[in-house]
Image 1: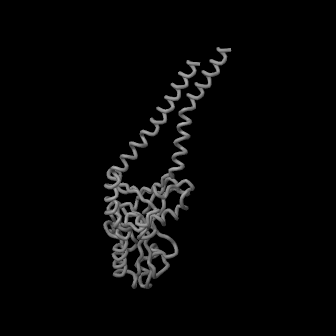
Image 2: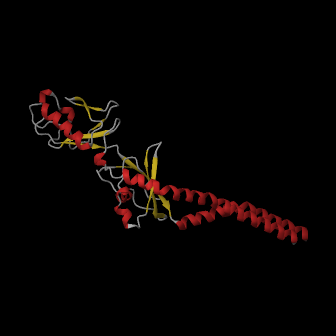
Image 3: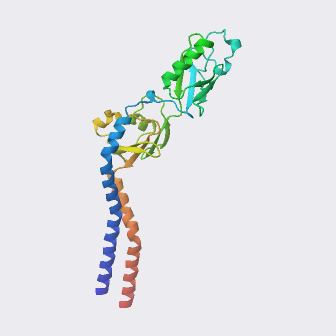
Length: 266
């Protein structure tokens, strides 16, 4: 029996060590996040002031350009038809143009038009003035940047990439577009990652805090990544399951030892 008690005590000690080992990385990670959170928040508050309306067109962006005054496509614009007022870009059919590496888009009857560095409104006014001076009578040009997007991951019903279709897109709207939270989502633990491959800032949003809902940092920017974490109850359950999984080989070993000792004693 003394051997049995000794074996049991050793296995119990191993289980405790396994539990502590599992929790240690989480504790270290939590401290790191707490230490860096204030800096990340300040970075995001500064960058979040810029709405999509102030986004500057870049090479490889995809633009949808149309004349709100007429339903004809830009492909129909030729010098021969220039006497017909209002021939312009499609209104009922989406017609897109990719910005070339040199910052231009190729438009019928105009050739390559420089749009890189302009906002959506500035590009529309520029193209409108060019057409007005050559082919069209009183055009109303509309430009949309259709490749802007946000990525939503984690405890959301439909994770994936979602287009930013408005000049101002809020966190709540994007979560709604993605179908809402899953049952195990933690609304106090939403992180927004913003920046590029070499310089990324992160901030934590608590949707139960009314001040967070009104904060500028919840205005979504192009290429933001939103990650929704799991609630504490679910995390604790998963931690327990991991501990049980880790302990299972030791429990099997203990059961085997008990059986062997029982057989030997008999």
